[in-house]
Image 1 (cartoon, rainbow, N blue to C red):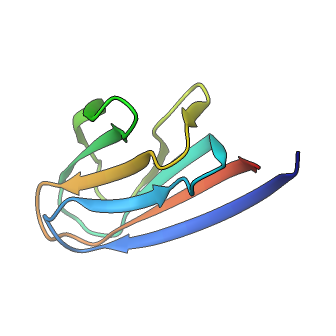
Image 2: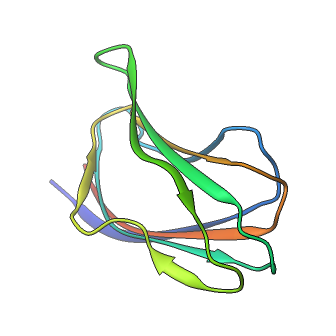
Length: 108
């Protein structure tokens, strides 16, 4: 079993639901940190969802969280587990520019 620490970043400027991380077949992901940075003077909201493909269901883990203008913040306080083919998604309330940074462990 291999363990690999990884980082991914996404710049969002859309109100479309956007996949942030998808666990590949045969791997589990433990998300340790999700930091979001609002690069504008506005206060958009963010919603985070996890699609559990084995249950054919999507669950909200953060709903319409208001982002303070020109600040960064940690969005989770405990690790979040994605099983094989599960998907972490983000949706913004407006087209304001935000960056999402995710640190995670991949277990294969």
